[in-house]
Image (cartoon, rainbow, N blue to C red; front, top):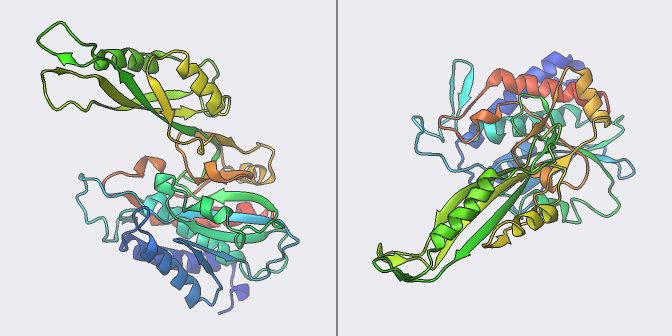
Length: 369
């Protein structure tokens, strides 16, 4: 039956069934970061069965609406199809999609399979429309869980996906937010730290213990508070998450001790400002791993945010990092599912959340498209 002869509810029901079917296939297909070739193929096959032209760059799959017009600005609908590895607390087979009590269990069902297939269904809902003010570009990206360079960043730097003449309007980034609007997102700055001492024998008063020097700096990371507190993102949060020495013998004073600081940065500070403060307060040497994952925010008066507010959605700041950090134009993070379930044992999403996600995506986009 042609889509145009169906009501919105009937169309969304069909799209929900298709979306859940694809999600079950994705759950059954291991797709760890950098190993997403099979899940990319599945998404490509989903498009092919519907006669929709699609393209693959690395393990990223994308498609554009039928009546794409380069003169119009484009809206990016993006989510990721890679997953973390299952943790040891799983009691269910992480690769066996199990539907029970209104839930669909399986690795990646919530993060970010539910948002991924809901955005795909939304793309299909608008695919044949010729009266849109915006083009639509759907992108299922890779390597999001490791902030890899071969995911959304690879796509945005590829001339076929993002040619110079293309004007990007805004993006919807699909992550589990309970369909509330993450208008801001903390940046991630990871610093490798090295405290240096002098080797010696533990039985004698010699050497300079690098662990003790590291402890003083770790205590600074634990107790220091940056004065700037964001309305949406709160304070900058610093956590020391790894500490180690190269010592294998118990009786050697360690000459070096390394540790890692995980810093979640609000929009009030640049990474350079954070690094300057750290350098001025610790004695260890520091080396940032990357300066790519900066904090981001979309204006509260942006049309897509206003459309969400009209639909009863609320705004908040997200403490977690996503591909939103790598998108250089306004991006709103929103999707079905609950971030608290992400990376947890026996991960699941409610199937009703997928239908609600599709319906809300459609209704919000209709206000601006």
